[in-house]
Image (cartoon, rainbow, N blue to C red; front, side, top):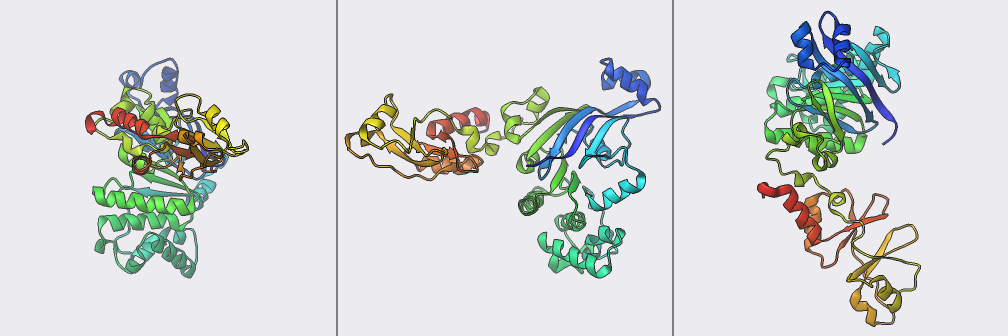
Length: 392
């Protein structure tokens, strides 16, 4: 993750004749409801600040009317802000001239809507190439680029079909292909999959995640579905009443919900499915030995001086080299046992499978291979009991 792609600072939107009056009331502690009751003006977004990092899928979540659709329309300036700033690659979108904004939308930003918004009389290929046509790209070049993205989303065989000949899921793939064809650095997806049935929806989430692994675009994704947000979001911002009430990774939000509103999203959902090895591990459960130490019975005995049965052996860069057992203390040169490490980001189901099959605790490592903790059967059972509760 690099520098922020999008920076939102103190963003406000009031729909009405006197936004300043409403902003002053809000600054004085009035609620959105107070403003409406006293002035008839509607607060769409109030004092929202966050950053979207380069290459992440940032999900905006909230119930209907929470302000998420207004917020993304402020980000691409389909709606003018009442106060605050939106910076994209350091440029203030609210301050750029109209011509520059149009160029920005054509080249750097793409939108995918819930309603597919395809042109019925145009072929799949022509729909996918439409953004490039508007940008003035020659027919041959735009069809070549559109064909490439149709291949990426699995629609190349349907290039000459009309939208009406495709299923809803396939139509949404055309919408996604059209957005990708202009090669945007920022994609905004507004409830893009919510009109699809659950199976098609999951399929589209998989398409998006596969593309993301290859292309690492920055994606702002609006959803009202927690399971979808958890599945695709690098980070999630939860909105209520025009404000952002919490921003965090799926794990952070599950582990530390900011308030009852956030907690209510998890009602009836088995949140353990979104946990990883990093959420289950303990950092000090297994004693550690330096690989540089001679592996003799006395150094093993000194490390295992408590009730521990195992010690992990790390090298000078904290990389895992193996483990030694208590029963090795009797031999002059204790045996270094090897075991496969688990990555910190490994999902719970894979962790359970590995832990059940192992008699020793399993070492957990960061992406660079450095040791960060261990998991054993007890950790996993405790976490499952805590998260699944009545859902087991």
